[in-house]
Image (cartoon, rainbow, N blue to C red; front, side, top):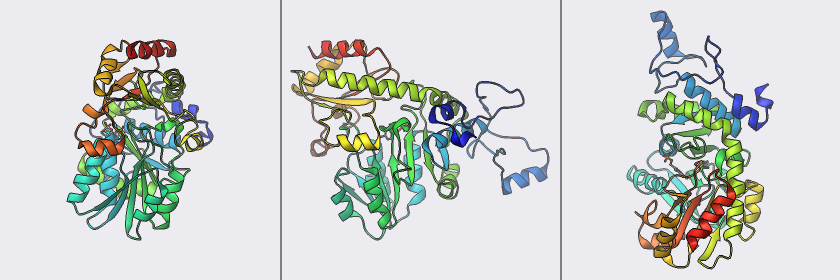
Amino acid sequence: MSKDWNKRTKLVHGGTRRSQYNEVSEAIFLTQGFVYDTAQDAEARFLNAGPDEFIYARYGNPTVAMFEERIAMLEGAEDAFATASGMAAVNGALMSLLKAGDHVVAARALFGSCLYILEDILRRYGVEVTLVDGTNLGEWESALRQDTKAVFFESMSNPTLEVIDIAGVCTLAHAVGATVVVDNVFTTPVYSRAIELGADVVVYSATKHIDGQGRALGGVVLGTQEFIRKTLEPFMKHTGGSMSPFTAWIMLKGLETIDLRVRAQAASATAVAKALVGHDALAKVIYPGLEDHAQYDLVQTQMGAGGTVLSVDLKGGQEAAFDFLNKLEICVISNNLGDAKSIATHPATTTHQRLPDEQKVELGITPGLVRISIGIEDTDDLIADFVNALG
Ligand SMILES: *Cc1c(COP(=O)(O)O)cnc(C)c1O
């Protein structure tokens, strides 16, 4: 049955629930609530709702349940909970797990909002946070303690595309009984082996490759049934970060094509990276699928491909980076990623603007760095656009 389907079949049919009309395309149940036949039925459902019984959209909804089942199948996770955004997913996963006095170890190279949750919010609530160089297993080992409750990292960091050894970190973290939470956005669900490699909880911003067409904010937390239903769900349903049914429908349709899109984007990203290597205007081309990438072997075993994002460092610093961005004709200047449209951004002045200069240096966010998310346009057109803009 559906458990044995291969990925592409799961992406198209997984989790489908049909109404009495037997519609082909998934229905959007745009309703906040559900009617009970009797007062006794309401009482029974509040006591113990079955898999096809819903109470209130903040708790769950048939369209949202379809999305959760489909992504859980793809990821190979027992269960999933869909959230209003990627940040609601990261926040929910960490806040539902932690309490004052707990210790967390996290990689230093993180998306700005993830860093805010760890450094500002968790610390304010009495959680001790240690940040390490995520690519250095020795640093993880010395930071982990017997009382470490959780570990958090992005499997591929933004925007310098360092890849973290999921299996290596999980072995160390599990030795002290810590729960491993992986933000897997840059790896994408298509190339993810996170659960198989030992991750306890996997988090996605669905805003990125899952939607893939820049329409809606969304997120998802995946893990064991025990974690999702006993730890995460009570936190999410009472704090209000659930996904809307309309968003779930967009994300379901996104999942149908994600494998085709992401593989095409990654193939194109590889071709673009290869075409730009050695260009006179560039100090560096960073792409995990290039053989000169520091973790190339790990990338091959952990993902099997380099992903859909590359970064270039222009020799001329910020002025040259801005000039390059302004000359692009196909690739747009924006800060999303994983979109069908190619998107370029200057991290130092946008996504990572908030960071002090020394932290930017530490994270490799140089004035000349431009992050490029490759879309599904024609590869030759994209290469011509980048080469032309480099001058
Ligand atoms: C975008 C992103 C997020 C946040 O997702 P939103 O949907 O924008 O809330 C979290 N982590 C990573 C790595 C991201 O790229």
